[in-house]
Image 1 (cartoon, rainbow, N blue to C red):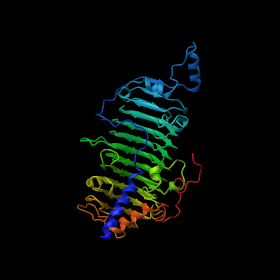
Image 2: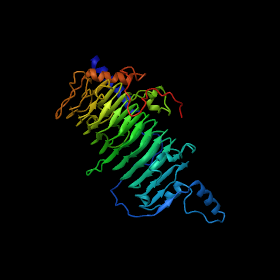
Image 3: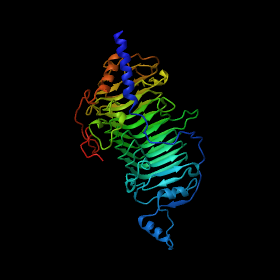
Image 4: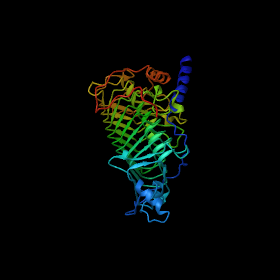
Length: 456
């Protein structure tokens, strides 16, 4: 009887621990609508230019009678002129405005800054009032929009944000010193995030969430991106039909976390693929200090710092061909989403973890390479782990829950692994279970464990 009571108490604690940090920002976002069907992309279109500083001065003089240049004084003014298929070109410089692209009148427009060097065209909202500085760029109910070649910074909500759309392209972007998410797609169908960098965000560098269920799914792709210095490199609450590939996830508190929560629609996260990524050194203990304000929900218990990839309530998901090394807690893990009301949605189900390389040829080990406690709530079926190289240590230690592929059937709970996971979450230092070591050099990157710079 005492053991059962302890289990119930532990489950309640785990629910509290994992529910808070993945919730969306407190900003007032547009209500989710129906993203609709894929619309044909208009051809041609006009090009609208935003004034350089010199042109803006000339334009101001023109209002006093002189003939001025053919450009718009702000990015927003140029966007407001567009019709489907038009282009807005923004010269290098720093722009203290928040840009909104709203409605199908602006379908398939292109907002282009400096693709060859996004840091040359900066959207810095830090000087605006609190309501105005939520996002650097927001797309709402405008399908097929492209945003390319910008550096968004000092936002309270998100750097580049798409909501209620079918199709979007976020490419050649930098999002940093931010609020909740760097590059974010919510309640949308299909899109591309590529060739971008996100850092120092107080939830996740990248986020795709609340993906509507679809009978003929439109996939989203995240490719050739970098995430570092965030609480989470990638968070995907109730994310579907997404492929994350050919990217680097390092120096975050945790690398990649597809997850299931009741706080957003359409749980669980499912039908996702994480393939051919470098996931390493995600040991950033932001609780000890960060260049951003640690979000309220993450000041208590949170996802376990020091981990590479964690599936939390994910289903029908493949983790394959990734290189995972240098984590002080674990490399790849999976655990039921305890707090979901629906036990079937909470379960880890249909998970395949295969062909991954752990420990960088033995030179930069993870504490545990694989962590999976088995069934906690829902039916854990058809989960398998195969052909992973470099695996030296797992939890449970005997690997009893790590069934080789293919596997069909239920995987019962290993209590020792489960209670180890609870201990991680209850650790206020977030480091007690770590096995720390130095890292061999990699591509000139400096490992981040404790932030020692000034907070911005």
